[in-house]
Amino acid sequence: MAYTVTIRVGSHVSRERVPSLADAIDLLELRLTALGPDARRGRQRALRRQYEPVQQVAARGEIAGPGRLRPRVRAGADVRGDGSIEAYRGRVRRELVTQQGRETPFDALRRELGG
Image 1 (cartoon, rainbow, N blue to C red):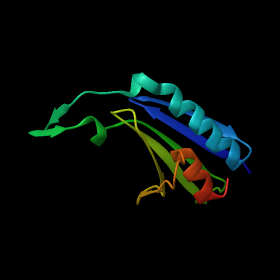
Image 2 (image 1 turned 135 degrees about the horizontal axis):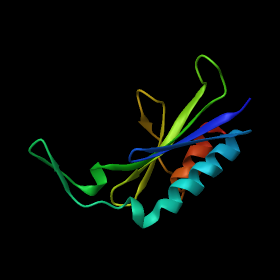
Image 3 (image 1 turned 135 degrees about the vertical axis):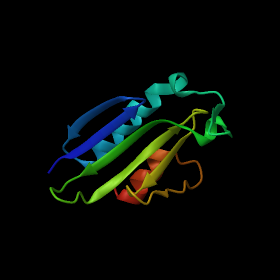
Image 4 (image 1 turned 180 degrees about the vertical axis):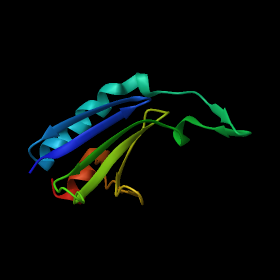
């Protein structure tokens, strides 16, 4: 019963398998917070629209597993172009995980998933 952590930064994709959900969230936190200033972006213009850094996803980390046909856990976090991080649940329909008090996005993800 392993969990897969997938990190996407631009066109680069990396995957790692870990034995527990707690390890998966820890790895996700380690990899995404390490991006730091490299994830920052300026305003972008596309199709006659202006996108602010907070509207852009600079990197995405996903947790999936365990399960063969349909992984039971689907969650992750997005690093925005301004350096902020938002945690979410789901894959197709992403629901933001609301932080409470002084929680980090990863603490909120642990609380939501029970990891």
